[in-house]
Every structure is written in structure tokens, then in C-alpha cells.
Image 1 (spheres, one colour):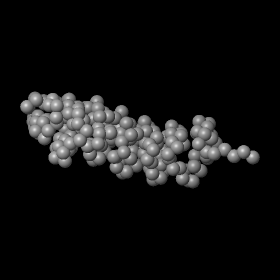
Image 2: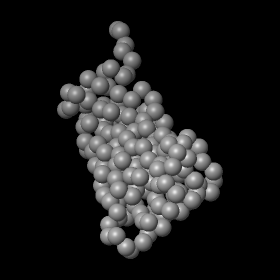
Image 3: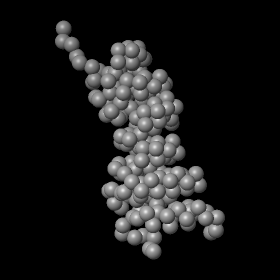
Image 4: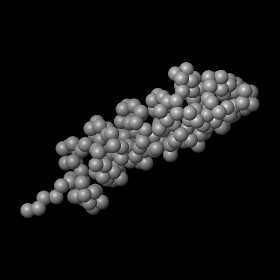
Length: 193
């Protein structure tokens, strides 16, 4: 069987799994990249193929390099057959790939989004602040952070439903933060009196 078959089949996934799980041959640094590239060649898969893919990916993810994890996150971000559980795991392990997942992936769990909103590195939290599907609880987690870039991203996100408490905190902070004040002025309606 050719590893790079045109169509991803359960047999191909089993072959990759056997190769990745064997102790012979030492580390296999490109295994996750190859697995993901094979998976994304087709927009849809059978339930069995999706299950096998997710099982293999979960098994080889702990030994994957940071670059492989980022590659997997970027390729699977918008793939319709990628499982939410795998995307959640990639979001917690990737660097640049996590930023893309947090910004664009609609299948991340609320728990992963809220945890990242509260404690992820700045780039990931800022990416979350730009999403067009933010809920008030996730906004509250983002608004508890001290970084100006997150606050400005929230204000500039026209889809973010900023509650009265968050707006009040932003207005208070904007009194000593010109960049945030300018962003608030652009978002809030102006009165002519």
C-alpha cells in the first residue's frame, strides 16, 4: 500500500498508526504532519475514518514537535471533519497554530476558549478578543486581563457584546490610556449637544 494514496482509507490510517506506535526506527518527527496532510486531502470522511484519525493523532501528539503541532492546528482549523476534542487539544499545545484556532475555529469548546481568555499568552487572548462569536462570560475573562491590546481588540470588535460593567471598566481605564480612549470613541455613538 502506498502511504500517499489519493484517497485516505482506514487501511492507510491503520498503517500510519502501526508505524507511529512501533518502537523500531526511533522518533518519527513528521508523522503528525503526514497524518494531517493525508486527512485534509478530502473534505469528508466516514465516521470510522474520523475516529481512527482522532485516535492516531491523540496517540502521536505527545511526541510531536511544536512545528508539527502548529502545522496540524493550521490545517485542521477549518476542516469540517476535524473533531472538536482534537481541536481543543491542539489549541492548548500549539503556538502560532493556537492563535489561528482561537481566532477562527468555531468548534473549540467554551471551556477551552474561556480558559485561554483568562490565562493564555497575549497573542492567543488577543485572537479570542477578535472573534465574532464571543459570549459575555468569555468577554468577562478577557476584560479581567491587564493587557491594553486585549481591551482595544474587544472595543474594536463590533460583534463583541460589551456589558455595562465591562464598558464602565473600559471608560475608567481609558481616562489614563489614550489608545483605549480613541478606540472607545470610535465604537461608542457620539452625542451632539
